Length: 316
Image (cartoon, rainbow, N blue to C red; front, side):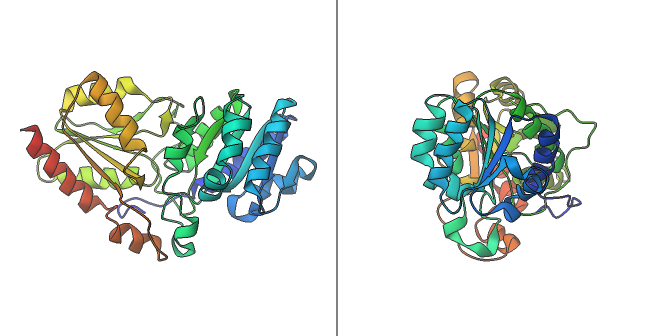
C-alpha cells in the first residue's frame, strides 16, 4: 500500500508459515478456523496436521467457546477468521470464556481494516482494536510486514495467555529483514527525527515513512515509530519521542476512537503532553479497491503530511 517501497507478502501469509513450523515443533498446538482456512492461510496447517485442525463452520462464537475448552485442557489454541467476524461475533465468548479465565487462546483476525477492499463494509474490521483492548489481559498486536509478523506470532505462541493479532489481506511493504529483531511490547523506531513523531502500525507504517520522506525534502525531520503492540504498550519509547520531538501524529487503519491513537494519547498525556493529531477512520467504508478506499478515506501520505503541518503549527 506504500507507493515507494517494494511489496512483500501479506501478513496472513506469514501466519500460515508460522503455524506449520509450530506444528512440527510442538504437539500441543491446535488450530480452529471458521470455514475460511484458504483465506486466513490456516489451511497450510490443515494440510500438514489434519488431526490437529478443526473447521468449525461459520460459527465464530461457538469456535471461541471450543477454543477455550481446548486451552483449559492444556492445548495452545489458534483460532482464525476475518477480524470483523472474530471480534464482533465472538466477543461474549472471548470475554467470558477466554479473557476472564486467561486461557491460552491466540485470536488471529485476518483481512483487517478497510484494505480487504471489494468485500465491503460488512467484512471490514474498523473497531477490532477497541474491542480487543476492552478485554483485560489480552495482548493486542498488529504487525506491519511479513518478517515482523513471523517474529511476533512466534513470540505470542511462546507466551501463555490470550492474544489478539490483526493481519492483513493485501501485500505489505517490506520494512524488516531477518536480521532485525522485532520484540513484542517494544516499539520500533524506523526513522529518527527531531521535529515531530509519526506513530503507526500495520500498513500505515509504510505510509508514515513515505510522509516522513516527503517532509524531509522540505527540511522537516520526522521520527517514525512502528507501535505493533498496543498491549503491552511501549510507553517509554513514546514518552521519549514526545519529550524529544514535542509533537505527534498517530496514523491507523481503524476508527480514530478507542484504537492506537487513544492508547498512545493516554500514555503521552501521563508522561509528557504534546500537541497531537490523529489520522484514521471516522466511520464505515464501502466496497472498492484498497488503493481507492485509502485515498477516499484519507489514509494517505499526503493526509499525514497535512496533519504534521497542523501539529507543528500547534507546537510553535
